[in-house]
Structure formats: structure tokens, C-alpha cells
Length: 115
Length: 115
Image 1: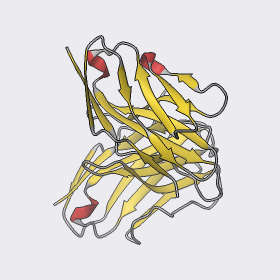
Image 2: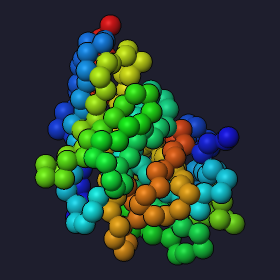
Image 3: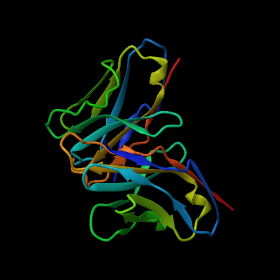
Image 4: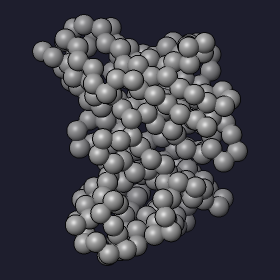
């Protein structure tokens, strides 16, 4: 079975400080990993994805994430947080399996950047 | 270009009534997904359409839920005899193809409230 865990429901960080939002996964097979962000009353927006190749992937709004196969993790990072980064962040995984057509989402982490 | 659109944005209905939710995917996207987001929870997969293939209905929670996609484009999710536990935000997403490498683009959602 495929699953994603986001161990922190809430992350608070001061503006200008680096931020990390954690994600671990459990899959059968090679994972395809995604991060999405949800602003209030908006749909999910794609941030970045890991498919293959370089373990460090860069995405929108200055975010990046590092794929760590041994730790089955895909943590989201940003060197300097902005107040506008405050939102709900979802990690998701998908695998190439017959019948596994959907993304499996974590329960989300609410990021609050404090001015 | 235009993103995924959903209508209505909000729907309040009485228990026992039927509702229809509409999704217009991004033009050219062959894959279409429906998810449900309940308060305080992550996203729950409902159904997946890819081209002219039979849909993957494995996520539908009961036989009161059904969906169709006409002409490979617009999709309608129908909930019959609504129950209070059906209250949630229903999200539609589309992607260029069904392969896991493609990120999904989400609509703003329809907030369904069953009274």
C-alpha cells in the first residue's frame, strides 16, 4: 500500500529564516513525489516534483525539496521564508503500478510565517 | 491560459437531495481526477478518467456516488440521496496524461454542505 506521512500539523517560522516541511513516504516500487500548496479558499497549486535524476529539485516561489531514498523522505525547504508563504502544504506520492492511478496525499502541514 | 474550472463554487443542499458538480479540465488534458477534501483531513481520491478508457472508480465511497466524462472533456460528479457526511470540498484535477510523471492541476473546488 502507498502512504505519505507529514509528521507536523503546524510549522511556525520567523520571516527571513529557513523553513522545512517534512514528508516521508511508503510505497511499493519507485516513487514519484510531489509538493502542492493550498492558499485559503483556493485550489491546490503544484510546487515541484521528483521523478528521477538529481535528488535536489527546485520549484516555484523559491522552494526546493530533497529526495532521500534511504530515509524515504522528501522534505520541502526554502532558504528564507516570506509571510506570503503562509499556507497549507501537501506532500503526495504516486507509483507506476497497474490500477494505481491517483496521488496519495499526506494530511497537510500548515505553515505560518511570523513577521 | 485557462485553468481547471469547477461549478458551482458553493452548494448547500438538504439531506436526501441529489447534487451535480461540474468540472472543466484544461484543454488538451486527457486525464481527469476527482478528490474529496474533508475538514482537517487530506485529499481522498474518488475517480479517475483517462482518454476513452474505462474509469477507475475504486475511490468512490458508495454507490450513491457516480461520475461521467463527456467527449473526453467536461466531467460531472453526481451524489444521490446526499448525507451529512458528504459535506466536504470536492476538487477536480487534470493532467496531460495518466502517467505518474505528470503533475495534476487542480480547480478551486466545490464546497458542498448537506443540511
